[in-house]
Length: 307
Length: 327
Image 1 (cartoon, chains in turn cyan, brown):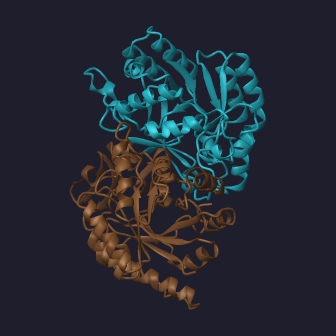
Image 2 (spheres, each protein chain N blue to C red):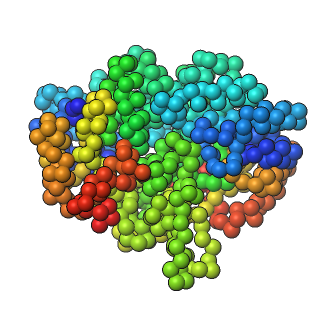
Image 3 (cartoon, each protein chain N blue to C red):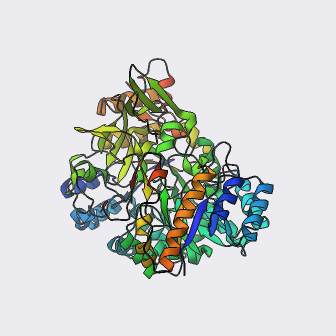
């Protein structure tokens, strides 16, 4: 297995965006997907930084793809999506609108926001030109194994969500704006204050979700530390790491060491705790009763889920 | 042309009630994971489907069969069989969401009309046209994230028919792209045809205060004598920053009856009513009211007013994204 860095889900300043992507050039990852996934209103703030980031990453030997938006409704969003096809890079389709603009036979990647649940869908996407598919995070390990086999059969690399807050939902409504009593068109970019999303707790104060503009994420960071062997066994080709504001370079190195067999899961979890002591982890979509579950919590000395 | 009323039927009795009350079209599903209202005691076996379709056809109504979950890897045969059986039962169309299943239906059942489910979340004209060109889709159920002007813009650029939700439950997230329920309970709309399932709901009485929990997460808290809304995740009460409240959506249901003329003008073909889990008397009453409204519109008469408020079971009503208040 190798490593893919997914598109940044949050709204960072242009300078921070540039510095982050420049830093990935020296990270032990194989490919990077960049661009705006969540909200088209953010794109103008860093759009002119994209060519330089691409040049730096390509020069460092990384494969690079551009993501489409996850939900395309407006005319300018359709235009931006159509323009992706002309950028000369692989497009990662995260809304099928992007596929409508790719000439038949053009190779493309498929992101985790596209519903790929079965062999028939993989076969159809492969015929249409898909070469790489990151599966939706909610799939259980048994399905992942079936789909990895189908991917191998059709020459499509299969990726699984390896690390980071899980993208659980996307809406036409901006929750950051709504919280501040504003509409989406007049949002005043409230999401910029929360570089990893805004924590959403239950009425009992239990950490549960995170708000990121029109997107809703899990509070917990998905973490494949305990799943690496099972995923390799299933035939998965890559793990996807989703950017976060703290310690991301260390996270990339840890997953690299974990894949190389140089770091055990417990030690890795301990080190993740050093980056952010409050970071909750989950891997329940793969092997638990529900997405929020964490297999580490079943070990006697580990932190309970809602500690 | 008069706007088509598309009504839910969770049972054969509801189907007959909807048709008798004036539904132009009824949608329903088989009693398994192939449809997105996979609730205990609901839906149709094969014989019931065949009979129900026969009854509808005899009364001049159509039946659409929803096969709109995403087939499980390794088990696609169950979904393929559902499409084949819908055709042999005489269905007027199937409502599908999955790319692989659309491809299968287009290749193996070319004569069976294909509609795109709201679960596919096709939200602009390019996406609609893409589904039409790739799979011969004739109608798309639009996601509930669009405003009326956005719907009009879509219809101006596509020959595909559009169907929109006008009454009943309201998703605030793009449908088919939400795994909140499986994160909290392990059961999801896409994989299991359920959202915030009753099997994972618990009510906890703590001295005059009633907590409603879903998968162990406290979603609502009300005084003992207040009505306790069902703990649907996206309509729950949460805190973020300094705020506590319904951060995603209030516990409201959709009622766009007053927008029927605008939706007609926007080029919408069909009006869809949510609620296959509802009783047949509810279905009949909603159908009668919406049928009266579209007939009045067709005759150039004013719409009957405020006809459905009492059916919302004490919940507040909203026009959702249609009035552009989200944007």
